[in-house]
Length: 452
Image (cartoon, rainbow, N blue to C red; front, top):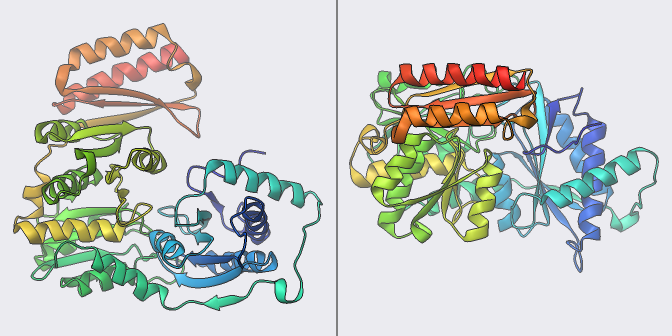
């Protein structure tokens, strides 16, 4: 059996891969592991539990709450809130554990469980491994030590979470959004109430899309993975910009007033310049992944801002930021982390910060985003190859060297083995789209030849 925990918690098709029994068992295991690690020492433990609006979240939430309470953990049920809200509340309420039920941008039948440690930070890999080992041991018959009487956990509905989180978001903004008309696409997800409320409290004139979740329509033709509706609405309403979230609202993409996409790289560029101007870009550094567009790297060089690049995944960005005290990082996909105000990617906060920059400068989003030019980027997946030999094949090394020589300083090549499939991703950037396409095609052929 493979590892349960992936890079973003445990995910699968709800009631098939991710069952009520699994959710309950993992929650009990998490409580026992954290107790053994000393997290609960000297006090009665408390957990914050939230979810996105998926129908399956209703029974999975019940299972998680039952598991935690049966292990002696008091539970604060915060209901439907974004992932970063659960992380924030875990920290602000002094809870020992946070649990979020969501599969982010995945389709409605999927769901997932993500645990947060005290302070609202992602649970360490070592603790996830221990939780999984403990769960497997007890699912094979090893009995749990169970509290009784007054030792069992109590369950409380915590309705104040919504207002506390929105107040936090608005409170950290450097300036108000008065005078801006903004379209928000909530993906019929966890931000459906939070994001419009936060933007409105900050002073914006808000128009909404994707803010009527029914448990079945999350991410369905809307949100950050489907921008067509947002583009059209921004143009139709003459809005200054549009903001799109994914199902659990830990990411944000934007649209300028002409309906053009502003991706995570461009958002990072805009925020980096604004934070440097405000003196909050610590060490004059921004963190991104190796998949960031070369145009972003060139823009940061021109601005005199240092760029540190990590492996793909917001978890690696966050690890680098925490290790060295950097304030800003993110991914092209729209996961943006402003570490002074959030412990994880926060799509609503990102959208608010971006809009605040537009309001403060009086410049349209297209002009601000124009600080970087997105170079054409071609991505080809090459399946059914031995991905383990990417770094050791002399034939591939020679092909990459030749491609880099041809592209020069205005191009880039990246060969990356997939973390979950038997394939290699070939990414090529160049100033000219046809050149990028031609070089990527030759490299894909080289991968097939060398590793097939």
